[in-house]
Length: 314
Image 1 (cartoon, rainbow, N blue to C red):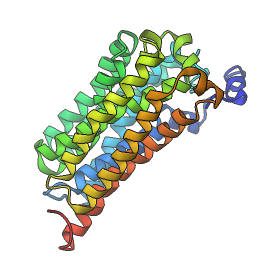
Image 2 (image 1 turned 30 degrees about the vertical axis):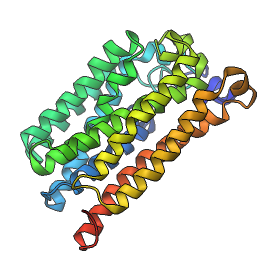
Image 3 (image 1 turned 180 degrees about the vertical axis):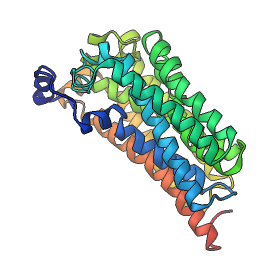
């Protein structure tokens, strides 16, 4: 993400936008996580949907996520342009005009909210609307540039998809839906703070008040450990609800033990050691954090499959 080619690519002459540029506006990597967690939330819910309704629900949730991504790229074009990690995005690179990104975001927002309401229920549509608003306005336009708690509070936007999936199937929020939300919410800060540790120059250059910028790197390492410890009871608690079972609990114990060990290693390191090995521990923790979240939700899905076969769940 920070190689020389990426930096040089940011200085190339802008060219006419292609289909791929508009796809990138929707942040497909983020969208893939949204789709997966929303799908899990929908499938583990006690009330199932017809396959056509379920497909439509996930499609419109994905479009809502894409709308959020497009609105975020429109608003953040100025800071994206000075960060090596984001300078090649369609808007800061000049391939897609900011006005077009805004139009795509607004259009997809309206389509996704209305169609989700028609395909499932108004509660799910309302929750999707709030999620888009929270990410595009509360996080992107306000928190991100205001406070080092930006990623803590703003992380709620990325935590809503499994709850939306659950509400699509049930029409209401339950303890299980809340714990799936809380799992992603508590996971988000250590995930992004680990990234901030080894992408240190980007946030300084852009003036984004990440914790590494405002409180220093030692404090960030401590925060990673603290939030990782807070994450443990949430993950174990979710495994003990109706969406959990022996398999889910076993997966949660192993994943969280490894995650805490990684956070502890980050906390003990100083900058001299980290720079000497090019932030190997921090990068490994960041990569594992992605696997951590995927395996947790995969375990919920596997437990539901075992439960339907009469051999899973509590």
